Length: 329
Image 1 (cartoon, rainbow, N blue to C red):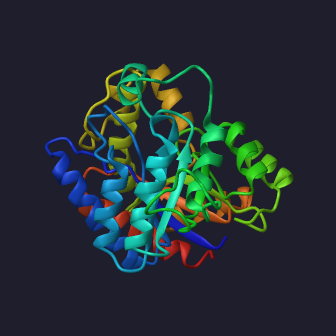
Image 2: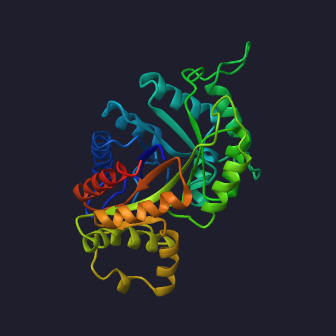
Image 3: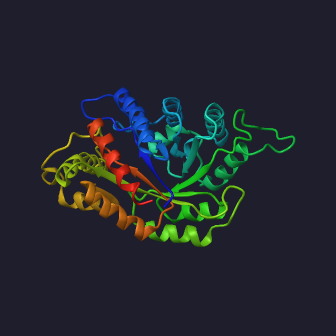
């Protein structure tokens, strides 16, 4: 494994505001840079009361301006919601302002419900144009062809690194076919992790972008001084995910001692499976769990995420994670 990084959903805590969430993301990115994390990604979600990073490129601009060296990017931009040219212009602008520090991860899902997806892009048709849109976007970020009628300005020639994100086999196949780096969303959809990584590595075609496969896996991280404290902090994420699965999304709940009593058993089973690729506990428990993950899946990079209600406890969780992971590289 070469690097470890952070995926932040800019969670809006109960009792807090979207402004609090965005300021917390900036503070977390500054801490991540200090702690040795390689990149800091933000994700696009819409119509979600508990997630403040909907205007992802705008938030990335704030984060990269408040840091000095850490890579900052999208994990990801949901390409069905956007015209490829506009994405190229946005991320080309970011790279022009902060050269060599911007990443662009692309997702195939809309990142929201059907009604919101229609509001985002009213002229959607039924065909899945994701592969074609990725190729179009790559073209805008590369050197423009002589006489090209349309160019991304800024964007053309920036060669912003493009990643394919996925939680199924489709993204693995596309990333391998195009010779792009691949990130698997195992932090909430782990079922196809092993098979997706195998397909990506076995069918990868070297390209102008990447000579050999580079696979990132996502995992939850909830670290504290003791196992009990870490489990308490993680209860916010469990409650939030359970409410989302039950059709009641909201702000990130405060942690509770009796989380089992607040979730129906069948929903809890679904949540436990979805969030199973995670490390929760004190430093030694975290070390053992992360070692097992790295040994089992051999990721080139591990990207960690953890929705913790208290921003100071969240930073401390990533601090413990960094201390452990530096010994595992």
